[in-house]
Amino acid sequence: MNTRVSKILSPRSGPRAWVPPVTPVGDALGVMDREAVELLAVLEGRHVRGAVSRRKLATCMQCLTSCGPSPASAPVERVMATSVLTVDSGTALRELLHRMSLVQASYAVVIEAERFLGLLPLREVCLAVALDLDDEVDQLTTYICGSPTPEPRRAQSAASKP
Image (cartoon, rainbow, N blue to C red; front, side):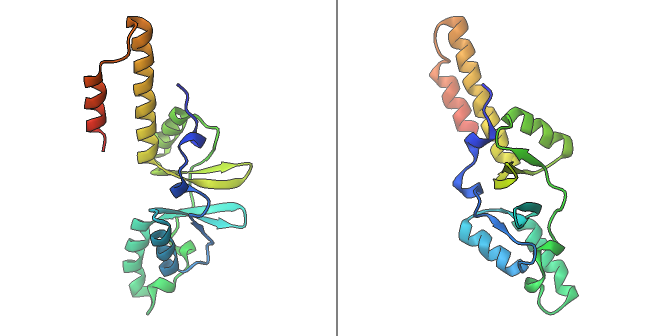
């Protein structure tokens, strides 16, 4: 199987999960709560300027306290990661996983024709690749043995997934 990134993009990682760079940190946390996401893309117009995670915002809220009376009013651009991995929605999941491992990325920004589509955390990519490999095992088992993988193995692998 050669599943593409576009197949696993979920509504949670869709276009609504972004903020402009001048958005105050406190407002960005509000967007994360409202949209139920852990990552936000930082967009300026149509261009991806960076990304920021809930963990990074929380850590920076503590650090920014020493910089002034209201850390929540500091712009996101002060704390965002500017070096982000961007991929096209047609990228194969295994290729994406390989690229993420090379640069030690914890998420990837998905674009199509320079339009932001969403963010994919490493966890979702790993899970999708594992399911893809499981399906491939079943297909090969059927081809070689004439029957799909026995149910106990599938049940056991499903039970071990978080």
